[in-house]
Image (cartoon, rainbow, N blue to C red; front, side, top):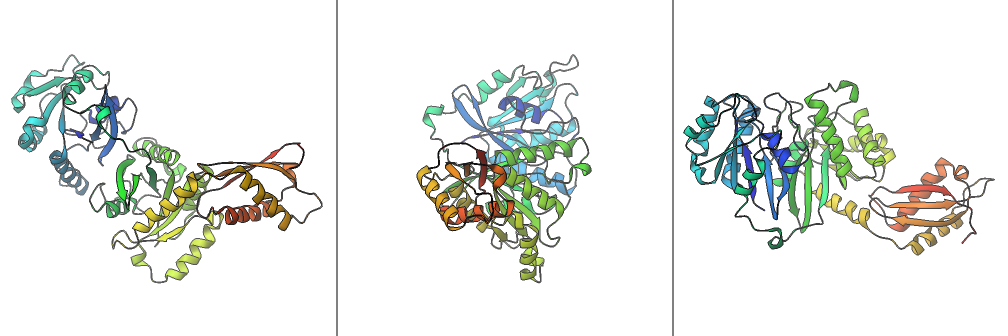
Length: 429
């Protein structure tokens, strides 16, 4: 799928245009330079055309580590791009930084479109931007959408229609979540074997949730790198607030979440909260202990993890080093295993026979007899509704035992399993 790349200096409205094209808010937009850091890609449609629209970090002449990383990434994208949308600010006028970026774009002159944003302002003027030396100049207001239709009409006119494109549909959506600086971006880059997202020792480097389409051993993934999630009282309203909300939205949209934990810090309360959140949302969970190259006693670490995360005992544990590349692809294999269980259909008749057999072989030791009239199964996530005589008759310890037996007999080893008790007075089957 062809890429249309949006570029320009910081705070000219690139992310606003990106969101306007997608007709939804994907990139974080704030009136602060440098909000977008990673490359944000999303599939977009215009009329009968489908393409990838790419939002990039603002280019500056700063020597800071993150600014240089943004610049290196954007320069690579210029080569890959089908078209390049060079956004400038009509309100502030032509700036020296615009001229510097224009020089970087001259080798790709034929596919560059200068887009003068904020032309709804009385102070705006597009005429001076012609001196940049590009033939295609468009005036728009990304906020109000003025001129965006005409821009898209021009940049997509030679793209094939959707009828000519074969679309993949069965992606495993895998999100990398965790506290700040646990190594999520490093892991994603190690899996992709390229610097797809910016990696830095500065906590909070990732702000947007970054989606990447990826194939591994015949399976198609959408890998999502998310902003680090701290405890709610520590999050200030602003960029971090919106970044964390994007991370929480990514969990909602996921099939599987890989909870990335810094092995040198062990399991924290926040890690436990995140594991519990993923489980409550009914998403697949992989516990990933990163930086094991720094661990001296791996067996002690494994015991610590199992003790702290016993409440998600079914979630596979993977011990990796993003830096050394150790065991990283086990994450993808476990995601495939979980997804297979997560989406699998099981015949209701088999589920009912299994429930009946467990109750016969392992009855609850209680004066209050449990009866199940029938069970109903559904997938995504695996869920069993037990129509029972009385919900209060089920002791918590027996329900946990019952779940483990169901997992064993239904071969649900890694995926979440929801058991819902519903009182229903019907003749016993």
